[in-house]
Length: 282
Ligand SMILES: [Zn+2]
Image (cartoon, rainbow, N blue to C red):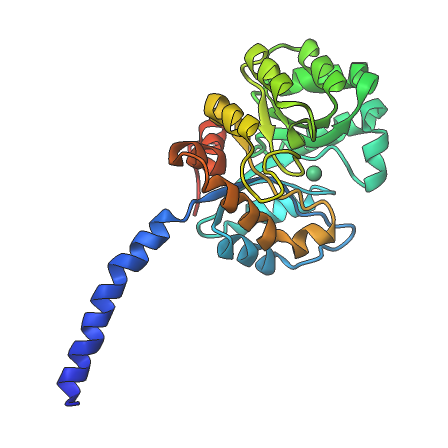
């Protein structure tokens, strides 16, 4: 083949491929990971560059960033990684042991005040709280602190604690980590109806799909009514979750693809933009 002909063939191939490739890229949903821990006790599993690469290859363009201690979150914010929107939350833990005791520990309030002075935080959490532990004066003080500063709360809790948090201050804006794990969808509907500011984050949430990977009828129904209330997340609380990060995001994409596109877009990232936006990336 003459050289110019080869060039023409290559050019034609490139022109043919480009629109298709662009269309495919546009179809790929942007994901916002609303349950990301970059824990470091004392060093992280993966260096920062590797973590940023994991987000890139999964189409994760935004993260609700937390870490224990908060140093990992500082690093994610300060990285100013191109194309990554970081929404930092204050983690009320210094060490893993704090998970059991933070709600009775005044030192944790000081930690929250200290971190808040950095000026960029949008919420407090993820924190763990069960049953009557949520009734302590310190928890009430933290809920009020959050409401007064327009901060969200990312709560890993049972229903009793959730209702106590909301009773401390009805204006509390709570993202319910794991959406109760297994709370029946009918009950979730009641809670969403009663508490218009309540949001559900879906990591570890059971019942969304059946054994064949199809979204179940009751979850289709829940998403049809409340697709504006859900967020997805990885919950990288242990190393294994980093190892399975690609699979977790593929899993979300698999069931999001079964929903009407506008519902899928909201759950994938649109709701995060509505909550925390406008979106800021470098
Ligand atoms: Zn978590």
